[in-house]
Length: 257
Image 1: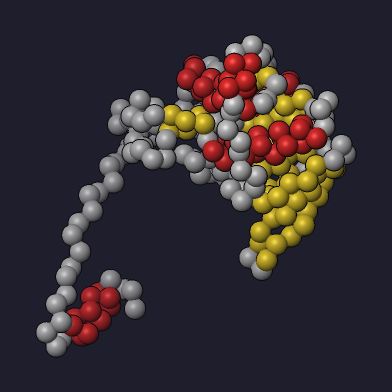
Image 2: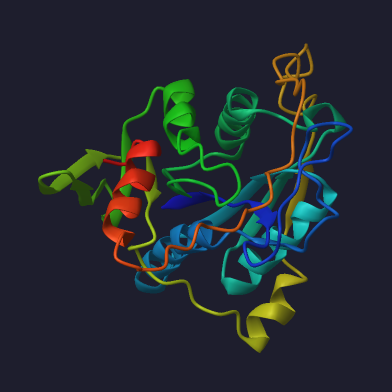
């Protein structure tokens, strides 16, 4: 089985994330970038299948600037067999629609039996890219799975819904996204880190994907941004016998009761 895993380089969630006031785009120099943990969980699902099925192949794929290669290198050190990096200056600031279209083209070019991804990225939180890729490719989508079971012909798992959970399945090829309740990602070992340097890593542009005719024309333009206002001090109520009435008045003024 050939499994393609979508990965992404994102700002470290432990640090402050900012937009560039001049462009409205993410300030990538404002914080350290790391591989998105949710996609590493998707990779872990693929790696566990490969552990039990030695003939399997895992390809990791990302779209992003040159620095995004770091996420691919980590995925290779974890056990992926090869990597594909879609990088093109015309994709700078690509929105969800453009991202999904380009990823779908790259996935189709690479070839696959199954595509795995996280259900939503840590930075954008859109949560729709896997579904849009599935739509472009005309394939079934199993979204936000907490568990994943793979065979040579099918994929199945459990998804949480408001009233409990559902067991879902689909024939391959298919697109699957996983949640933070799925398999916890392994750490790269020394052997993996060393062998990652010798694994294939291909770079693709829009022209390579046959998308050079205005593929980036749908990129959203940010017209204005504003800083989040500083948090103000709260109101302190001292109980002098009127605290209950004062508290009720405060909540009523804020339309909280």
